[in-house]
Image (cartoon, rainbow, N blue to C red):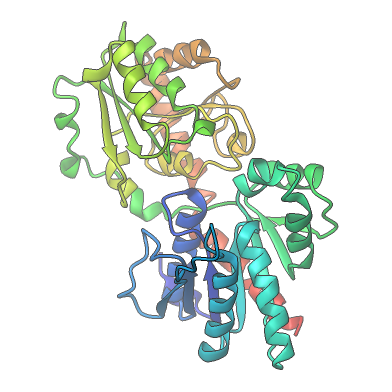
Amino acid sequence: MDFEKMARSNMKIGIICYPTFGGSGVIATELGTALAKIGHEVHFITSSQPVKLNVFEKNIFFHEVVLNPYPLFQHQPFEVALTSKIVEVVKYENLDLLHVHYAIPHASAAYLAKQILKKQGIHIPYMTTLHGTDITLVGKEPEFEPTISFAINQSDIVTSVSRSLKEETYRHFKVAKEIRVIPNFVCISKFNKEQDKCKKDLFAPSGEKVLMHISNFRKVKRIQDVIKIHSIVNAKIPTRLILIGDGPERSSMERLAREEGVEDSTYFLGKIKETEKALCLADVYLMTSETESFGVSALEALASGVPVISSNTGGIPEVNTHNTTGFLSKVGDVEDMAKNLSNLLTDNELYTKFSLNALEKAKQFDISNVLPIYENLYDELLSKL
């Protein structure tokens, strides 16, 4: 993709996001990196350097939100520290706008910063992108609803990564603001399979089929279902399961693999920054989430030409098309998922068709199609001043 040809009037953009391996942090980092490549000055304001951020690239800057310990507080006041850092960066770096990813605490901190700066004669618009668990899990707690609703309504522009998430936001919050859907994206060129560089024989020396799952290993991902599917299919078709990521469910997952007798064919590889290098190993990608606003890792799998076996919840059907790029099943229906997986692994013609369809579907979400949409919204933000 030739980013230089996409350049337009340059802006100074502040991006506030979680710096972790989750989808929102990855998307925010990739977006900022792409914006920097076409000439915009991008300032990341986060608690630590985002895992996929390369600060040695032109036009990219990182500002750490530091939490100093205060004996008075049982929990450190991150939102206050974030607000103060936003004010500081906007003032001294002369930012034009803020793009915050996640409603809490980022949108609420942006609102506070905006009011503080307004008193100093500085007007800074901000856009909020809703990614998922800020709405689908955390946001449903009654004590958070007033703050989240307020922060969303006070945003100058609000976007959502899927139609499903938009609808859920309206159902659970008192939101009067228009929510515009801009899907998550992928840089297709990163995910070209180079079989000569792929180390598949390290995990499947006898040509076993490789299953893969990537996440932050939280309960909502239902990764135990992934292990059960592997166990069912492996009894008939030799398979290997590669699990990438880490999180609170890791120990229970390892226990279940031992109980199911698949510990020797299950590999925990930990956190990997360049998922494209891992996905070249995969034959099929598994996503069994209880809820998922979009499914960035599933999209990355499609971009690698890897069919997806998934649950049919949230925004996943907007990414994985049933009987075209993979199969969809009800949440928790491991038997149906295992049946679909077996059919896919034993029908070469079907597999090839799905693999080609996967890549074509992923092209619809290429960053070259999405980046101009964000730029247009930034222009709209600045026109409100």
